[in-house]
Length: 263
Image 1 (cartoon, rainbow, N blue to C red):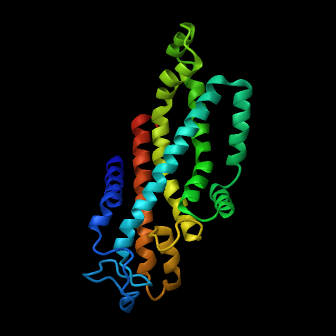
Image 2 (image 1 turned 90 degrees about the horizontal axis):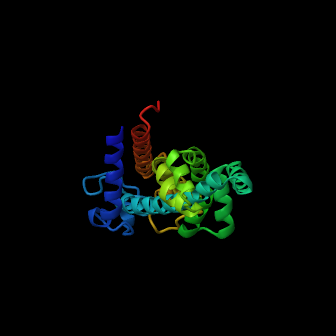
């Protein structure tokens, strides 16, 4: 499972980085005379409703999906780790306040909250990243808080405190390294969620705006042609499914590697 996840995720990043050179055509170039054309040797995945090459647009869309996922996960993991570590180590009123904020945000369905945020801020790629980050950090905060409550009782943490180490030094040198493996596993699984979130918002017209290629906007554009040209939705849908399954397999493999006793 771990190997399969590494292969799929690796191919996804290769497509995102080198897709503009691998693409057989310009993703924005139109051949209106061949619109909705089925897959051929020249166009392996066919053409969309405006005569644009679907393979080229999927490769370009991979860059958007992985860029959004990487930024959202990076910021969410950083903020959530810092907040969760402080809450778990300091405790008291600080822990209670942070826990109430986290519980409140987690009480709302994540995608619905993201839709509400983007609807208020306006549809754009930046606002999608902001919305997904605002709902994403709470999961890391809850995870790290729980891990910190366990890590702060380690003997070397008590020894560092007895030697006069400050809170900041203990958190940075001892607590965060102890919880980092769990954060890495959560971040890997979070990439899958961020990719689905971006595609969902783009599908609803709240994310990446045309003509920028996005897997979500491709699904939205093809839903009117499910019967006469199903390849418009099948291939972008497969791209999302395969990449999400790859990140889930990678995360599950890392989880078992970090915790061999996990079922």
